[in-house]
View 1 (cartoon, rainbow, N blue to C red):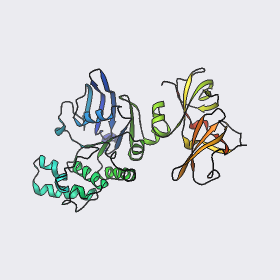
View 2: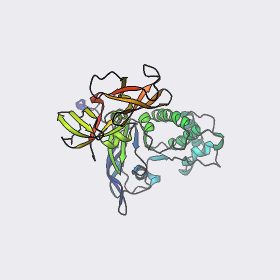
View 3: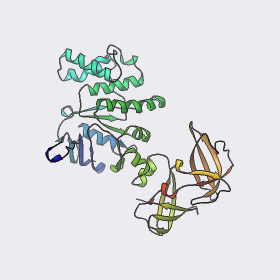
View 4: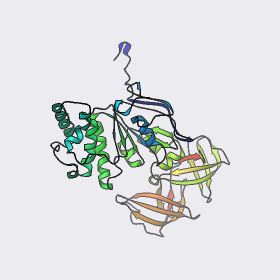
Length: 371
């Protein structure tokens, strides 16, 4: 604590201000600004081609920005070559040297820096133990599993003690089961080292599971920065609502408004009520309404009480483990996906069963078309 009872505020490890990258007439990164607190896990999430890899390569120093500033630990990195920056990078294909054993792979960067052999051996042993791979220094790369190779790649970076670790879709080449396991493992490793991780991915589940904060990127810009809970439950834009998580999207016209209480009629003729804090809506304008499958409930066909109730029939039931996805078709022919647990009153639904769907107006998200 400082004199005057002022708390010291930790300086962010990484700060980007108005960072821009042009390739001739194409703008890949468009005035992006953000900061990453010390010791946090920050993910940049977006579809292929949105600019996230270009942004990561600028942080690493492999590409120079067209404009803006980039600071690590308060020092501008503009013009600083990659080998002089306090960062390390894990690539999707790991880039481990197949002709070297694990110890030599992990110690490669230290040898390049001219560190003494005895110190290299000590530091390599320590970092391998911290990633849960003690005693593997003499093994060959091809003797390790996919998950172990991931940890070796991280160890090779962390032995250099970077201020920021950059990760370029490192789980993309793994099979599904191992990828699920490595999500938890990656977050545990980040917490163990207390190092700032900047992680890029197109996989929303990776970002939601591992991150302290997520930046959702689209067409070179950040659409929203927030916690996983904020990005999932309170998306700022229609793009975020549609890209992060599963959602039913309905295009509808606003027929009446009273504060946050909005009445709409879908293009198929279905009436709905939405409570939305979003601006830009007015009577007569078109909107996009997003409904998560888990916020929609089912009821018996004779249950027509309440708001947003629609009679329909079951079109399909897809079993996917702990839950099922039930697709319901209403009288207009519109389809709605509903997420249900395997237990309960509707656990044995079949195609053709009559049901009603209903949902709370507070749980929908509504945006002007084109916003």
